Length: 292
Ligand code: GUN
Image 1: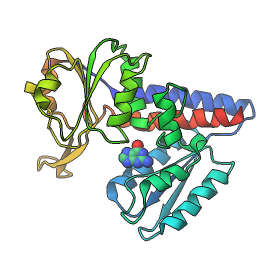
Image 2: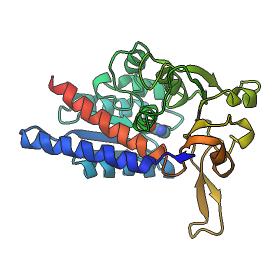
Image 3: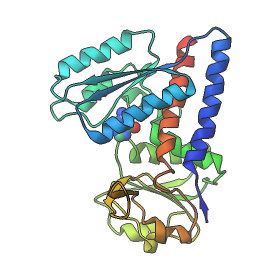
Image 4: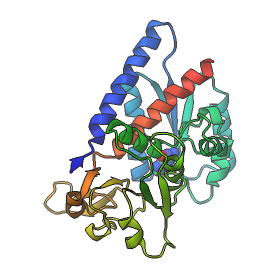
């Protein structure tokens, strides 16, 4: 069993990005610039967005954090999106989800210029992904493909089971794994809350990607011997032995599942660091595309 070291892979890709930025500056080109929009005071969202901004600095990007009150109206937020679309200094931006209930997320996503949609959530980018036209890919699924590639994990002809059909992870992940390229060419099953016989379906998986949002849902009896297990979940569970009073676990019961796998991602330190790295890569790509 090999543990997939997402932290190390993320650091190595980030140092390649940093080198490319340094090269750009030598050539008299500008630094890529990412903006992040945060609405309200959700603790987890705030942590993610701050980490995205901090990572921009690490690779030499410019970054801007726009933080709005929970009470901002949909109309006002749409105006801010327009400003970012029209600001040529900004190459890409993200609107951290979820948004407050009074704001229609789809309306906001569809207002983002596809060329600046470094989250890859705009219907134009989703359509291009399905049609295998080069595009900005959603960060978490893209990060997972980078991990599979880094470890040379075979995917062609494999049974891949993706659990969870969110627009951010599960659905795009299932599409990427079925595309006619590497990583891809897998036979994909997308399981979700209405799936029957989840255990039997998971046991067929050569590659199992869990993006359900339920702590330790995936247990040892659901795993085929030698499977590759990718855990997208991240949950805080109470642990009095820790100074913080909690520890982080994924959707997979790591301690018991790991021994049956050929490869497995830990939580933390697996998929998480790759999401931000993929976002940085998308921002560099967006910046380069805008210069063409
Ligand atoms: N919320 C959870 N994951 C993501 C993500 O990848 N991008 C954005 N914008 N919001 C999220």
